[in-house]
Length: 115
Image (cartoon, rainbow, N blue to C red; front, side, top):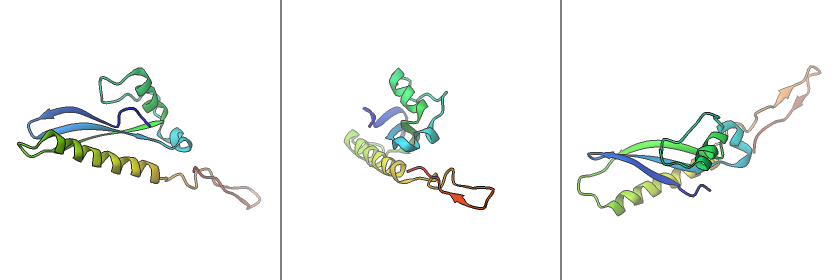
């Protein structure tokens, strides 16, 4: 699990921009890997950027509008809910379930897949 899960990037008026970091299951990390990727968070450490580049951590940048006068605790609670939903999505979503399955020349099938 990344040490940081939600990072507030900036605020312009009522619009808050944030980054969510989610832990990627080890077997799916190669599919998330982007060797040149770096975080939208300029304060990310070398290790954090490496985790994103190797696919160990998935990053989603988003924005939300916050009511004028909203308490910081309410904003933080909403961001925590967004992160929980994102982490659950990363853990559950697996479009590679049959990845690498193939049909051989003799007509037999070999199952593939990423857990």
